[in-house]
Length: 94
Length: 80
Image (cartoon, rainbow over all chains, first blue to last red; front, side, top):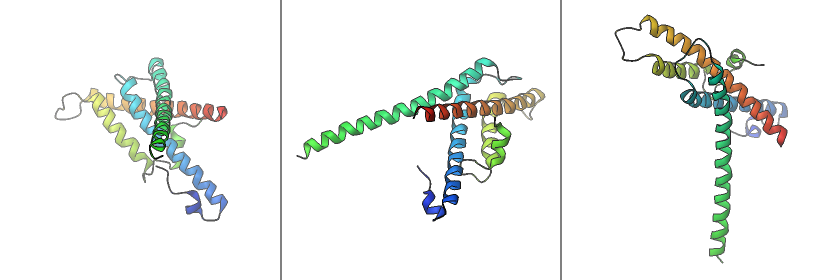
């Protein structure tokens, strides 16, 4: 999921490492914007008009927020599930 | 505030060589779906107008999403 580590690519040069980190972040940001625009377009856009009306605009903003909430919710719940699983399997191996 | 134009020029594009390519592919997909009903022998006037509007609205949407995401990221960082 992560790209190559900055240390691997930049070698010993901290400035280059920093540059690579920043560029990687920018790329990730853009990827997500593309993904969310695509998803939210389906949910928020009816027929394209002469401008983006305020209802559609609000929908897009909400959509972004709820998408990130969903992502965090899933991460948290997976983490919890893993924790309870490992506690269970530890008790079995005693 | 960065708009679509400056992001476009920065070269970030999710790993693709040409950042404009992703945008073009998605616009074509979305606007075809919205604007073309039963495909005829050519794109008529209304379809072309619809596609043009659709492209502009897609870019507006992209900018809106970009701003909203940026705000959310800043809020998250502030809360850390």
